[in-house]
Length: 149
Image (cartoon, rainbow, N blue to C red; front, side, top):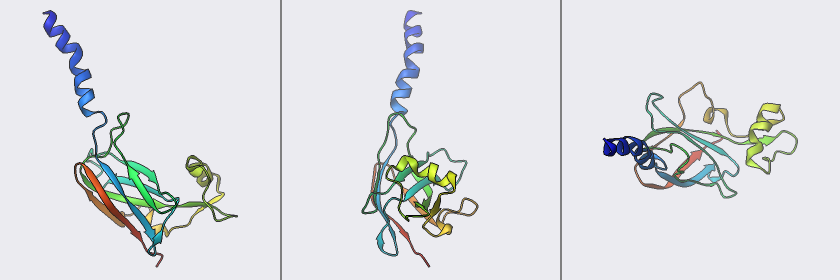
């Protein structure tokens, strides 16, 4: 009886340990008209909203590079097909993104910002223009290529 009680108590912990931090890693580069797209927000979401393969948001660096790594505190991405929505919110007056990526949402909601990439790449009402098929493990050299026309 005591053995069953121990198994019953420890099973959820073991299963949580197996699933937490699971996921895949993604790295690549975002470009607009073949130039690095710095300070852009990339949102990876399943093409089929019924699939439970995770979603993720990442901001590109000054060279347009981005990296998503598994995080033990989050569900993480699972293998599957993802739509990638891209936006780059900049200050209306300066044309520059905020210094702190955490301020992007505040800039957007305040009406003081404008999305500097073509709307079709971030439109939530249409199918994503950019799709990627992510595999288990490391997904390197993922290209997110945008065109202004």
